[in-house]
Amino acid sequence: MILIVCVDNKNGMMFNNRRQSRDRILIERIKSITAGNKLWMNAYSAPLFDGGICIDEDFQNKAAEGEFCFTENEKPLADKIERIILYKWNRDYPADMYFDLDLSDWRLIASKDFKGYSHEKITEEIYVK
Image (cartoon, rainbow, N blue to C red):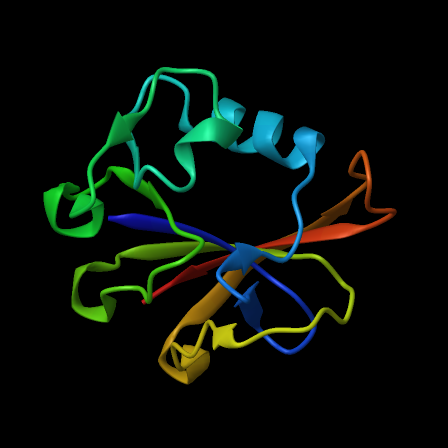
């Protein structure tokens, strides 16, 4: 699977069972990147998207090779991941759930900054094994 996750400067993902932030331009970017492919997520994240997604509480296990998974409130299943698309908010938010996957065995193949709707700068990083 191809994992998509958003983090703050300290790799925080969630705080008090809520997403730290969201940005509608980022969501449009994810929809563009995943167009024509399956995009899996759980019911928590589904309201961010307007259809065309696969919703299942066991979404990471259901996703096949080459399919996308967007996670906000679940730890990634490291053994299934073939690629990571990491979006960095470039801000410090309170967090109590973190993206703790060790990226030292991964290779950064692309990095790009873009302007979001509510964020001056969002960084997209793409990693492969």
